[in-house]
Amino acid sequence: MFNQSFSDMMQGGGFGSFFSSPLFLLLIVWTLVWKGLALWRAARKNSPIWFVVLLVVNTIGVLDILYYFFFADMGKKSERHHHGGEGVSHSEEEKK
Image (tube, rainbow, N blue to C red; front, top):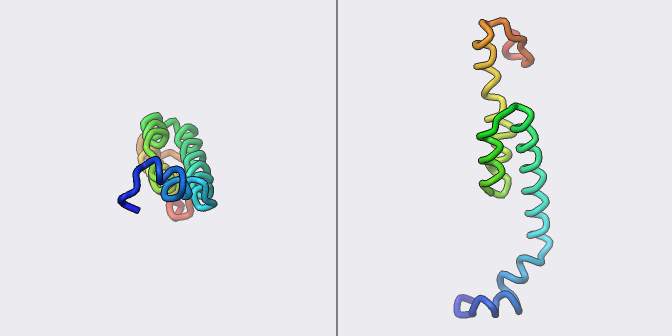
């Protein structure tokens, strides 16, 4: 396989067979779903830097998932301090 030229791999197997496989299509759908969710959340939270990073960097959904579940919520704690502690808390942990 390593001795084949690129055109041979695209025609008869190698990379060409991967790009037409169900695994590749599943990978595309997986990436698009997570990228869409992460971009939507970044836009709703008015985070232009995160929006551009998520739009440009492709990590097969890894960065998108990390942003969606972890990084997007990091700003909640600092928002409450900007309002002099009068912000409304939405999580159960902050209410205790």
